Image 1 (cartoon, rainbow, N blue to C red):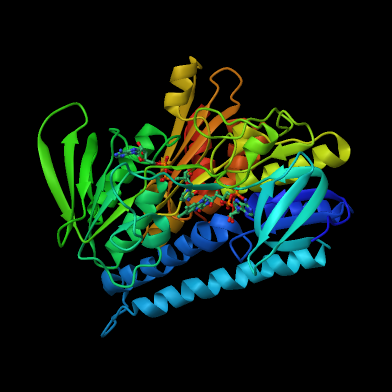
Image 2 (image 1 turned 90 degrees about the horizontal axis):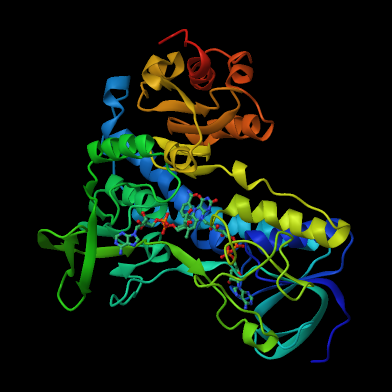
Length: 471
Ligand code: FAD
Ligand code: NAD
């Protein structure tokens, strides 16, 4: 095919980073092409990440609650059965509805969507191997790399997505494994452990560090989380490293050892989930053709305006620096288009919330106690347990707490950490307060509706500089 007319922006990757940039650029009146090889838009998040995992978390929670948490509420149910195929179908329906919705939005904003794999031919030209066969080229004044990430493999353990799976296999199992071992007690590990344990699997999580929850989770909250998840039936082996794996037998076996040296043991399972982190994905992108280099962790190197060393080629999302989160990718996508169009943009990296969608949810924004200690920053702590919150008590859902960290001199909020019902929604209020530079007194003096879970946030703020009323 001949080179198409020049585009203002060519985007490689149609994940959250890529499709949001495409919509934003379309809204700004730019001529945009978005290249995606998966066959559907939305990337990891919509197809095999955030969305399908939350569908499974929601419905497995409902199933588990009906089985184990309904009788004392006065609801007696008869013959409760799991229909795994239908559970998966419900997940697929959510996914396809959303990916089609994104395709509609690109069309609505005048974005050209090409289904195929993009490779840099030169600094302005991207060659596309079309999914339907053949190839084409696109020329862009600006090019955005938004190719995302992939699961980090475990050395020596072949992933077949059936017995040894990444999250992609773990959201599509066709039967409930009798036993499942999860390597890595980060967010993926704990969300997937929750799903399969609720559906009846005996799940063991092996975590190298002494703390679960992955990077960023406050230590006190991580300990509380582990206790609650353990009560739900998940077995934890923290401070434990996996030495090797064997898929030769009927069961998959893992040899594990105490991280600091100690007793060796062998764990067996029907399914092993590898959830030890994700790594940037640049395979087939042809960065070598334009002389772009990666850092030691495979990330595309950029400056504070998302420019690579070739200034009209920029990069956002999982494939570059920062937390691998969909909403971080989305913020960057908007900012990068603003940089291209107007010369300025902004993302506040100190104010990106994290949510783990277990039950209860765990959510945080800003700094943890260990972050503050490491940075030598003084702080004051205020906590409030959900067991003292009227709505949580009414709902018979009282596990967890809100913990607020604030500057002892200025009272400015430094970090907010919640484990409890609906923490993922409640953290939005904390994020807004942090973004606006609020003090704990600002939050404490803001009227919160009664009875709501969010009163626990207000009361934790009261406790940060004075005393809570209800505890
Ligand atoms: P991606 O979503 O990975 O998109 C990149 C796209 O680029 C892909 O579709 C890929 O096919 C395409 N591509 C790559 N190379 C080429 C090429 N050469 N040509 C054409 N196309 C190409 N984050 C949250 O914030 N909340 C959550 O609840 C959450 N849950 C998750 C659950 C799981 C199981 C996983 C795995 C991840 C989860 N994440 C979550 C992380 C989230 O999915 C990522 O942060 C997000 O998808 C990053 O967006 P991205 O656009 O940078 O990359
Ligand atoms: P992670 O970095 O959150 O956790 C990986 C965990 O594995 C860490 O605790 C680490 O110590 C442990 N680990 C590493 N090597 C190990 C080994 N050899 N043996 C035992 N443990 C080992 O990574 P993840 O859970 O795979 O998630 C990947 C990315 O996806 C993260 O950036 C995460 O933020 C994102 N994600 C987000 C959500 C969400 O926001 N709800 C959900 C899923 C995934």
